[in-house]
Length: 152
DNA sequence: GCCAACGTTGGC
DNA sequence: GCCAACGTTGGC
Image 1 (tube, rainbow, N blue to C red):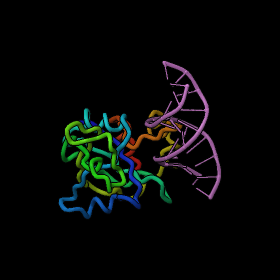
Image 2 (tube, rainbow, N blue to C red):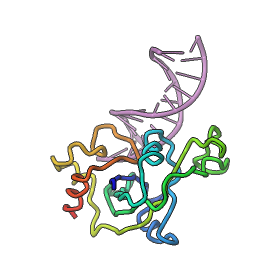
Image 3 (cartoon, rainbow, N blue to C red):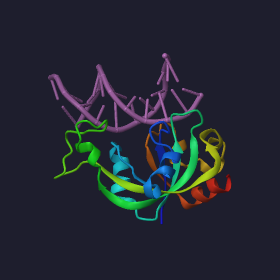
């Protein structure tokens, strides 16, 4: 099993939104970056665990845990001209973009903020903390995963 | 709201 | 294939 971190702007989709979805499951649509797509399409497996990260908000940080509930399939929002993430170059015969479904596991007892994560020498290699990193999906090692959970 | 860092686009 | 211009991300 592998571990991941996935960013979401809470104003668009928060950990509480995921909690309130039917089946506590939602598709992770709208990823329009090739590196992030490749991770979802090629590497994410059912049962993989992910940190749910809130970005672009008052206190950016890790707020909860979710798991992969369905492996990759075409992101149909790319086919819809009215969708914010419409991509005319992607079509259902040969889709460019893929997504997975994620299921709520739990909220953390507190937000583990980006500020706090930055202070930890043990997390120096965490992709989230590397300079200029803008990936919305990134891998987390088992050691990093355990270390972060122990901060809770 | 600012702006650094980065990815993408498109002219050449 | 280069690279300037542009758009986006996301912390602050």
